[in-house]
Image (cartoon, rainbow, N blue to C red; front, side, top):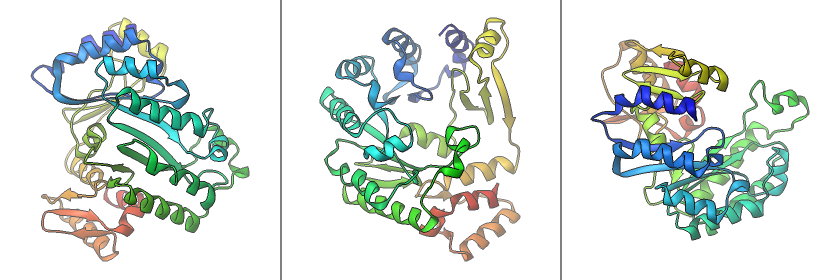
Length: 330
């Protein structure tokens, strides 16, 4: 916490004259911070918060209780993001989660009863040994849940993870099976009013994530703590990931930034344009280099993009192949 205080003192002058529309406690397990620490951080930011600011905290179901929710609400936290991942016990066991379906459901309903009006959950598909039947058990529970937002991710096996170490023994759904799981999810979400507004995000009643939308539209943001990313004045930075090195740098009056990058024309246009394509409303048409426009025309011909009057948008097929499109554009 000492390092965080020092970083705030160093960086907070950048916020003078600015209005903060989103405060997000995320990465790691921020809900394990003591109420005193959470209260202190909120107090730092409160003078800059807009009247309708979104204040989110991530939490895992096994950590949650009505008393903890009451604490969050008293601090002004008005949005909860729960790492549910699955509502099928066999799938939860496959990915090593320690909470059960029953605990996840209890955490969601307790949050609603405590007074949270904006509850988001994460779900995953393409899990080891996942079948249509096990995925259906998760999707069938959604209509009864008091959630307003859902993020959907497919499991990708990354290096230096426990999954990667045993990747040879893991059986994930084949591509055709994966597509079927995705289509099942999209249909289930649509039936209960969770409207897709970004490749992996769905919301009821227009309650889209202000915080994540900021990333996709290129809104400046400051991140605090080890490994935290920032995007400010066109420069992208990330802090040192090692807690002790991060803290030592700040105590010595040295910047805790471990990586810094500033994209120049036309790379910054390509990146922002490509990121905005993740939104279903698309990326606004703007002046782009001729070479980029040629690439966009080819993507239209391939059935991956639509050129509208004001926006370039992903097609249904394009939504499935965003990574390929991004590689073409960046």
